[in-house]
Image (spheres, rainbow, N blue to C red):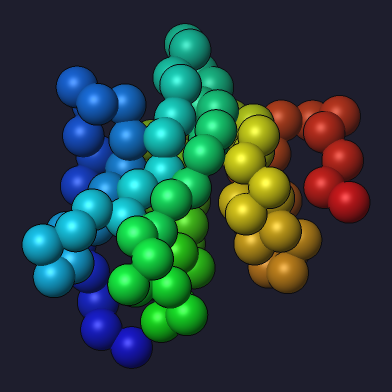
Length: 98
């Protein structure tokens, strides 16, 4: 799979890739030492290519690098963490990823 460059677009409050003239993204809210990942969106023409999964992984790597506590409000992000439990270490204590 191709590697895409993760862009933290702070003005738009989203992580994004630029792919074939489109912008797959994860919207977020940052509050002090926490980051709430609220919504993941991959344009229709890019679905099924693993881009959403790659975007979540890249975003989680950035969250870890910034030493932020993650609150995964987006169901897609929560499902990724459920499937990759090594990322649970970033999640706010007391939040159950079911």
